[in-house]
Amino acid sequence: MDYRIIKKEAFVVYGIDRVFTADQGEHLIDIPQFWIDSVQDGSLEKLSLSTQKEPEDELSPINAVCWSNDGKEDSSFRYMLFTYMADHCNAEGYTMLEVPASTWAIFRTREHSQEDTSVVIQELIKRIYTEWLPTASYNHVDEYELELYYGENAHCYSEVWIRVVPK
Image 1: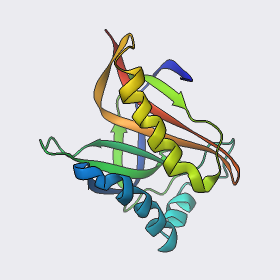
Image 2 (image 1 turned 180 degrees about the vertical axis):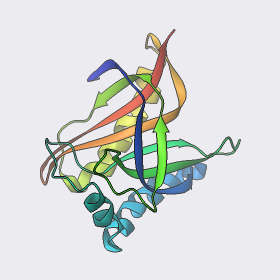
Image 3 (image 1 turned 45 degrees about the vertical axis):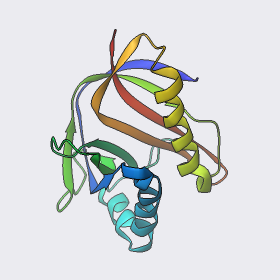
């Protein structure tokens, strides 16, 4: 698997979040639909415009983070379409989230088309949990998983970031 380990200081993101459940794989259908709905109702474009800045590299202005649902013991979790907070942003009306300083294992997908992003990310996440984590020199830290998106059209790739600590 294509991965690297980095340490990153705390950072703040803001965006549009919803609560999803992992029961019976509902999130595998509901999260892609959340993206579609956010495009169709204009909220994704509005979030992108709130950054008030042109992208500087291949990183999409909108990415995703998931985290626990306020300590609930069920299979629900929060998922946010986010942008990074900066001085020039207009975050009024959005959910704010501070992601703590952490060590991250970062996994890169194969190159794919924009339309295949959901499938490719879901495949990678499954491999992380079934192949990499059982044999890794790291333990997974619950809370905060990032999905970062790069490129456009037929030349995209994504990264999945999970918090880890050495075993």
